[in-house]
Picture 1 (cartoon, rainbow, N blue to C red):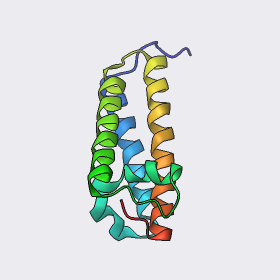
Picture 2: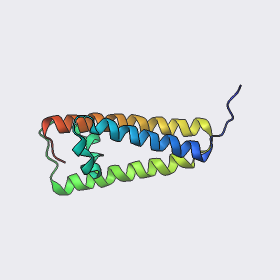
Picture 3: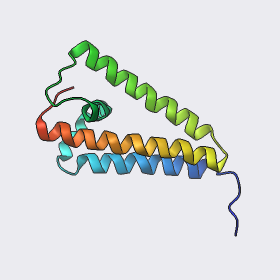
Length: 116
């Protein structure tokens, strides 16, 4: 049975929410209290590419966090607006890859005490 070329909005939203929930659970596995600092979640992206002793400073760190949240917001808008299956799953794959990197970075930051 062939898949239709379009994907319903409810499936798109459901998959998007599932990806975020799985990322939140994966981030909270070592330290559940980390969920209280959800607003710092995108900092994990920067931890993956920066040395453990890097201190961006308060202003730059806040700018990076806001920029990363904007990236996730734009990705969400673009992803959920795609009703064509192939386009949606491409954007969804980008989201999942970023979330995986983000969770890895959060685990690295938690383990070495890195502050954003």
